[in-house]
Image (cartoon, rainbow, N blue to C red):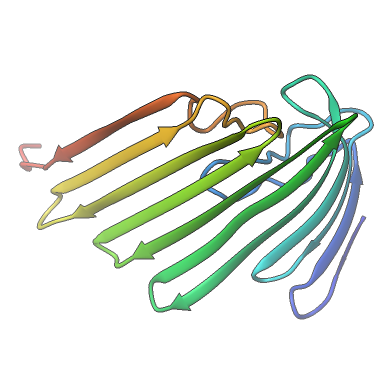
Amino acid sequence: MRVSDENGLSLYWTKNKAHHTSQDLFRVLHKDNLGPATTALILAADQVRLGMLGSVPLRTGELADLWFCENYVRAGGPLVLRGGMQLHHRGGPVVGRSASLEALLDLGTFRAVLGQGWQQRQDLSRASIAEIGGVGAGRSFLNFFWQRVEAGFVSLAAKSNKYTPDRRGWRVEAGTDFGGG
């Protein structure tokens, strides 16, 4: 069931249906991670999403209740600060939380995305991501990727991780089109 108004504010409730995929770099929550008893109540506006989800199967095998807030702030021009995802979950006696903070800069030919994530269950785990790149004259490009994801940092409310836990490294991609057809 969905209710919307003319200002873009909507409220919806579902049971055993796709619910919400977070837009954070780490994809902490994915809409297809659900079970027969999964329920979702989500309030969505232009720059914020608030939700309560019940009986979501975590990757640890337990069912959990989740509360989340996802927000965006346009800092002016091409800069977007995304509060990312603040998520709290309770599955049986285990309580946990995840959070991320991100900055996106898009200048057309140059783009940078920086993200930091935190996750707490028994121990604190962190993840850091940087993606910087640009397109030069013609079809030349240069991209730099860097990541540091600690072993305990996983997307608990998604069926897979966007970034592999316990991984550190960087990659550079460069290329050009010589127009040889």
